[in-house]
Image (cartoon, rainbow, N blue to C red; front, side):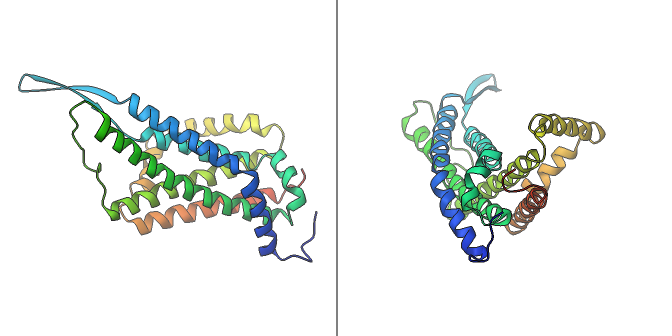
Length: 249
């Protein structure tokens, strides 16, 4: 393992972070690709329905940006896992002071990636709004939230950034766990699914309660605290677990 006698932790983290920003530039290219796909499906596959009122039948199409958020969430989760793979750690080894500096650089990078993904997602949602407002022939009815004021825009941006950060922390922990044994990449998904099914069998409402605990929060400050604390715990667990392995495992 390399020594940090001639370079303090902050310098090692900075050097490692610069390296990752160059290596993972393709990560942001894939983000743009994911956003384009999300915009496409948001526009071409609206939710259709029918409603009857006073013997008048109304056909409506409901457009939303859920596709963009869903695909970007998968992007965040998958890329966080990729950053913990054995090949990525071996490629980064010449630039790593120790496992801690590598983890810190990864986490700072993921925080930055979450911020970029959140901002781009909000911009993509406005792209859908502009298209629907100016380029659709249907009679358009703006639902609440279609037009956002400054406060709502800021709150929405912060919310999606924190959402992606939480998923990055989850993916990073899952990826770190799989490095403990060569069979874990195969066994871990089975174990996780089995645990989810078992917990759901014991308590049917646990998932909804968990989602409501985070996303049902009405105070932005409390929501921020919940996500940051949870992400911090997940990242700390990743560091603790990886301490059982060498940098070049």
